Amino acid sequence: MQLKVLAFVLAGGEGTRLYPLTKERAKPAVPFGGKYRIIDFVLSSLINSGIHSIYVVIQFRSQSLLQHISDGWRLGGLLKSEFIVPVPAQMRSEGKDWYRGTADAIHQNINLIEQSAPSVVAVFGGDHIYRMNIRDMIEFHEQKRAHVTIAAIPVEKKYAKEFGVIETTSGNRIVGFHEKNPNAPTMPDDPSRVFASMGNYIFSTDMLLKLVEEDQQDPNSSHDFGKDILPKAIGRAEMFAYDFMSNSIPGEPADKEPYWRDVGTLDAYYEANMDLRAITPALNLFNRQWPLRTAGYSDPPTKFAFDEENRRGQAIDSVLAGGCIISGAMIKNSVIGRHVYVHAGAEIQESIIFDNCDIGRRAKLRRCILEKKRHSRRHGDRLRSRRGPQTLFRY
Image 1 (cartoon, rainbow, N blue to C red):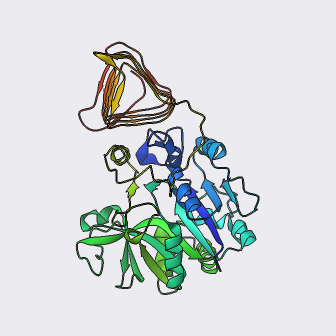
Image 2 (cartoon, rainbow, N blue to C red; image 1 turned 180 degrees about the vertical axis):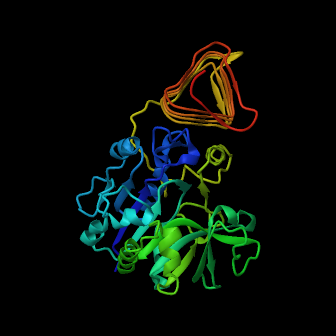
Image 3 (tube, one colour; image 1 turned 120 degrees about the vertical axis):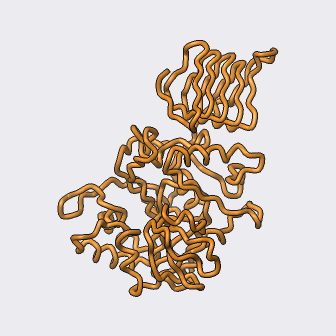
């Protein structure tokens, strides 16, 4: 019998390290790869895995995220179990607070879990770039008869200080948590790497309800899964780490390494976008068996205009979304959003251009992140960065 799965996508973080891209939008609503939003990756993984009961927990600067979900993520099923519903803070805590942490976000929505009565609850973050067959993780959870399963990815030991590290036995049973500790224990069979938590969890429903209820009674808790609930559950619950590197995506080569990126900083966000330009990209956007879904925009095709020497519209090793007009301009090694107009003589290199930008004649952009609805109109503008990507608003 197939398990009944209820999913919560935690999309309420401020994304302060990604500022100014998060100045007016939630981090999961930040554009990525030309036509997508960051949250599209977790939602696509859930839908492709056959999980259709999804609540998206929102909080900060949520309007753009609400609009995106409304525009593109209506399942349209006849069954009550098929939905993607945004959930703002319910003010169910004693102080009628906004969400105070990841665990509090679940506690304030316990009624949704009780109404659904699922076999397991998937609690996933909404702010990373990855593809995952979540059914594989759920099968692992059931095979281990686990109460809690945490998705983990092996990383080099030198990065232990940047992650929450999971300490495991040789059978992947969790015996400890080490938050951003450079001396965290390595993997049992690999002394050069540690198991980093991806912030994605599968809970048996009864155990989840028990843990979040107990956490609410602790006045010293920050009400966070990684910092509070899960470390306290060691020895009280059957907890296992699911190795993300064993995850298999339909339509991908058997030897293809799973892709996961934390895009919490501008540099990391920039590099993840640049990954898409490769001849054989680590993240494949063209797998029809495991499609990356997004809002259904009715964009016209992208157009390349003019074929004259020094005035030829062309793009090389780049990714372009729909509705663009490349008019006698050169684009190289870049990711271009929807409805971008690039005028004659302009050059764009190694840059990320958001939707609705207008690049003026002979403008020069190199290693830039250009925000939407801003314009470069002065002839001969030269916009360069010598020390990494920059977010440009006005010229």
